Image 1: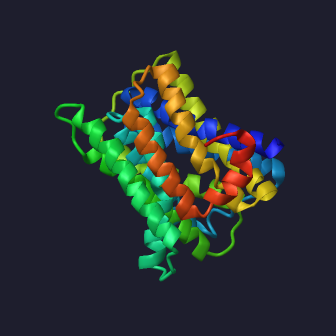
Image 2: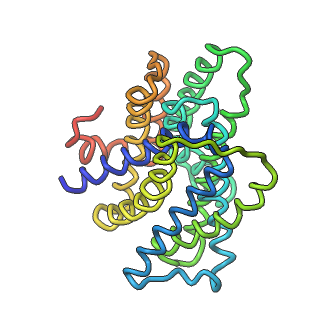
Length: 296
């Protein structure tokens, strides 16, 4: 039951990250906000590393951390922040669940991995869900560009690339990968600060959103995720993917009064079923973690 509570807490934190981005991005701009996010997360993990006497050997593994930092943090964070300027929290959180679909595609195309029939069905379900969710969302608005939606999907594609890269790279360790990649991301985002204009205007809500985004949603969340992997195994810990959209929808509704439509639930349901099929967690989750939580 302790692990179930940890999953709920992690999903609530990561679901909240989209809320904090949505609140703070108008004041900071996408680039500066994400620089603060990864920098605060890196500082937090540095403190943890010092406490645990575990350092990531930044210079020795600089190429690895820069590559991982780009695909796992810098690029997806920037794309999500760009999309958050126009896309609602609930939609961002649901689209975030499409990462496993990209993982299947990359595994098949680049890594020559076999694809199970369940994964193919999962991709179809996911595609239908994205079409329903995004198509209706954009049709209900005027003069809305499809670019923010493509940016969000590009962010989840980047997560999938990072996942495959991590599997193929040397075993550096989860904490070191998180710590080193965040410093790599912080360095890589700096040039973009000079390329895109920003005019920081803060208030108490914005400041708290930035601090919580960097310290809790980035730094502390990594620590919790690693603990869950050690306690439950990677497959069970991945069930957090099911829960993040639920919390994203909840925070958007409670804090920002975002409207919940029938299409939000229909599109989200298709995507979540697809995630379950692609990751192979659908049967396991129903029998295990999700059964205990009485979800679905």
